[in-house]
Each structure stands twice: as structure tokens, then as C-alpha cells.
Length: 434
Image 1 (spheres, one colour):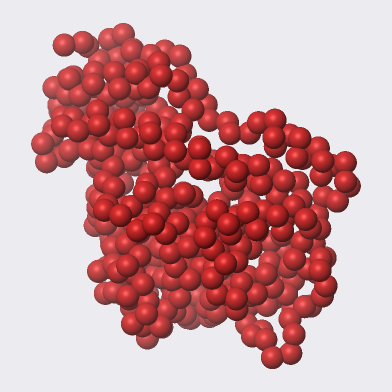
Image 2 (cartoon, helix red, strand yellow):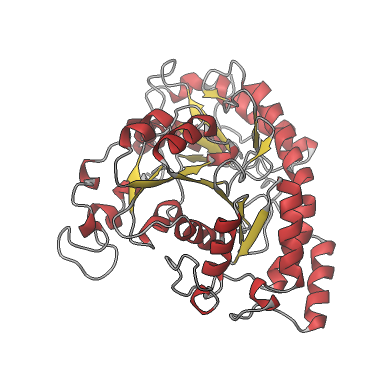
């Protein structure tokens, strides 16, 4: 048995893995054309054709609708902006509640706070890491107006169950599919599984234009409200339209960003397919692995693998620390991260209940509207167990790896699995540099 590099053995790989860069000559040429045109943004905040942006923005929206199978696409300058606009389009206001996972990027929840609404955190499914419908249903109250479901790591949430809950209680269902482009559930694309879906074009994602987001919907009224919120809608809204949430925002995408995104969108199916091929190869190698489980892919689901999320087999390895395991993989040359994010309800924003204004104690707005929501008592056992003890993310499954790099990845996983006994009883504080 080889001595693990973590304890002084020879690492299997000392050269960094290929970094992911989907930008090519197509994007450069398209941007050059926009620069030559001189029209870097096509938006004007007044009635007329320019209210909906310039030619690159409109082409991107048309292309996205075609590829995703949606009726309407509304581009934004970020996915965060798109999430905020989605909550506004859904009509949430002060004191309304939105049920959301605490195991996500912060904007999934603060999108509610932006409109004076209150995030209520529900636990997640231990296999898919997405909202647990039973936990959601237990939290529905007379104040609930929406559910924000996140397709974490690229696996769609259980939208069949969530749609039943939303229909029963007349709730808007928003899908944060930032990590799941080209994922699908029963043949339907992620970002089209709820009333409004959000894609991200941030630099970390499958495709990107630096910063950007796209909101998708089949509902013409929601599409109109998304367009209004994006572009200072109070100066364009017509008599008889819903004025709620029409305080001006500038969530507009530039023509430069749209140009990059168009060429990126064309590449998306191939880029995701390569991730899926590599992820499938790793999953086969992890079948029966002594330490790690491969990601679960539910029936009817196509996974997009934003990251490759494994779990420590704690029941079989009660004396192995997940944190030490991640460091052992990294020491061999395979980037691995222990855990994902701190549960959002543990952030000072929620624990101190101060959103806007200085506030005193629990009187910060909008939390003062919901004294019954106690974040200090909030507990999502599945989230907390995964984050502190089980989840281990592999950082190199992005489709750009060579055959040699894939072979090294599999060899590292095999070596660390074979050296499991070396990890027994070791804690992170026992390691050098701790």
C-alpha cells in the first residue's frame, strides 16, 4: 500500500490540472463587431423599441428560448439581478414569506429581502442536495407567497412534488438553475420547470460572459414584469398594469456581454456533454469505493455537473474525517473541497435580524415584520450534517481534462481509497499547518 502524500508519500500528480476556459475566437470576433458598431448598450428607459434592448440582447434572448424550450427570455446583468427581478415579478412584498434552501449562494434568499419579504429556510434532500418537498410543505403558512428551488450542483430539484405544493397553496415557484444549464427533468430543461427560471452567465459557470443572467418564463405577464423591473419600469408602465415592484432598477445587459453570451450559448450543449462524460467515468470508478459515494442521479434526470459532489461514507468509516479526506485528495494533486457554504441562516444578517437601517435587536427591517420567524432556532439537520461531516467536492470535473488528466484523477481516487486505513483517527488539527 502506497503511503499517502498527506503523510509524506509521493503525490501522484504535481502539475495543476487544466483550467476551464470556454472562451474562444468566436467570442472575440463577435465582440469586435459590437465595438466596431459603437452600440455598446441598446437600452433606453422610455417607451419604444429600445426599451427591450439592442440587437445582440434580443438575439441572445431568442436563442435561449429556442435552446431551452421557453416562451420568453429576459436577459439581466447578473443572475443575482435576475433572481431579484423574479421575486419582484412574482409580486412579493413586505411581510410575505418565501421558502428557500439555506444551502445555496446568498442571493437566492436575499432576493426576498430586496422586496421586504422574508426568507424561510427548509431542509434539503440528502441525495440530491435540493429542497426536500416534505420540509417545504411543513413550512407553508398563510404568509407564504413563493418557493425558491435551487438546482444545486446541476441536479434539478423535485419539481413534480414542488409544483403540487405550489398549486395547492397558490404559490409562485421560482427555479434557481444557475448551476444547471442543460440539466433536465423528464425531458424538460432546467430553468423551465417552475413559473420563472434563472440561468447564470457568471465567470464560474458552465458558460459565461463575465457577469450575466437570464430569466425564463412561459407566462406573458411575468415576462412583461421582468422586463419592466429590468429597465426602470415606472417610466414605461401603462395604465391598468400592476404597479407593484416597479421602483426603477437597472438590471440591463450590455451588447458586449450579450455578444459573448450568444457564442457561449451555442457551445453549451457540447460543453455540458463533456462534463457528463467525465462525470460518468468518475462515477463508475467510485462504484464500491471504500470512502466516497458518487452523486445520485434520480430517474428521469439529466445532471449538468456544475461540480462533482461526493459524500464520505460515514457509516462505513466512522473514524475518517471528511476534512482530512479532502486534504488527502488535494495532497495527491486532485483539488477537493470539504463542504460547500455555511447554512445561510447562520449568517449575521439573519442571526441579528438587520436587513435595512441600523435596527436594534430584532427590529431591523424587514425582519421586524416577521417576529415569528426565529433564525436563532432554525435548524436544517441534513444541511448541517452534509456541510460539516459528509460533502466533498471535486474541483476538476469541467470537461476540459485530457485523457491523461482523467487517468490521474481516477488513480488518485483509487490510491486514497486504498489508503483509507491511514486516515483512521486522524483529525484536521493533527496535520501540519493546522
